[in-house]
Length: 396
Image 1 (spheres, rainbow, N blue to C red):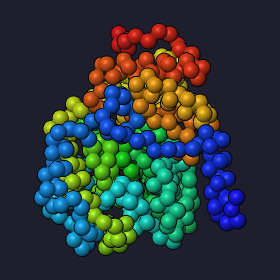
Image 2 (tube, rainbow, N blue to C red; image 1 turned 90 degrees about the vertical axis):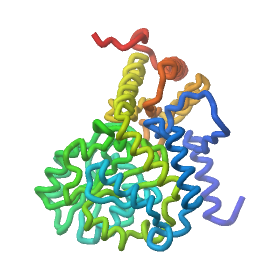
Image 3 (tube, rainbow, N blue to C red; image 1 turned 180 degrees about the vertical axis):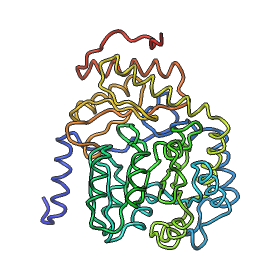
């Protein structure tokens, strides 16, 4: 026992989480294994692509292992600027600025553009980084129902503030569905509002060349549209970026605290992300493949009796309910050779714990067959009954 009230609370909280099935531990990779990876965000399978790895090595050899400082001191290299130009071109935006993570890019975009005379309208299922960024501002926050365009319209019309910012994921990170971006942009224009779109789970997945949901919706490049990006998912690297009007990029460079005071993105990560962009542009089949594999996984899971979300990108959620059942299902999949995500509160609301599967472009037929077997075993262990025997998808 301890007399320190904070330490006593820590012990109680750890015990509470353990009893509720909410205790978390890092999954440590000790080397290559034969598990089918449906848990990572390596959507296009580029993190181990020899061209991407080689570009990372070459960048480290040229510029060093670290960036040595912040972007405004010694951390900016010609490689960072080349990556920013390539990212802007890829998502059809006029300019871009690279950050050391997507989380920090979200914080930069929102905290820079929101002051006390701003209302921020946020989808209830937005990513934690967007929520945290909004909490750091002095603006008034309005949380609206998921994909509820009418609620956004009402919040814009009723606001006393001069300025308004709509914040949404493009593809939502857990359910994998797509935001109504065209409708939100129409409202933003009508009400002189900004629209911030987090493209973390749509870059490299949505659009013919993986240009993202905003470009696919035809709204990228509009002066009031700000895109936040991550380099750690489809691009197989690490880091983040903001793509927007040049005036906004200029303000972010001078005012965003997570840009000014953070060490710049490591050259190896910049080099890897740049090479990944080149690969996506030259091999658009990767984008089609990941979406096809996501649809195949969803169909197979539903035939086994799982309740599934419909993927707009690479993410499929299989709803379970209680945390312990979700953990048991994930462990059953692992024993069968498939690594899946297990999402429990606070990542998702109470009562909707789930398995989260992420498709990859480089999944083979044997990987998909093994996944079906693993999901069947997990379903049996937690009491989910199949609809019928699972074979090949009927396309007749």
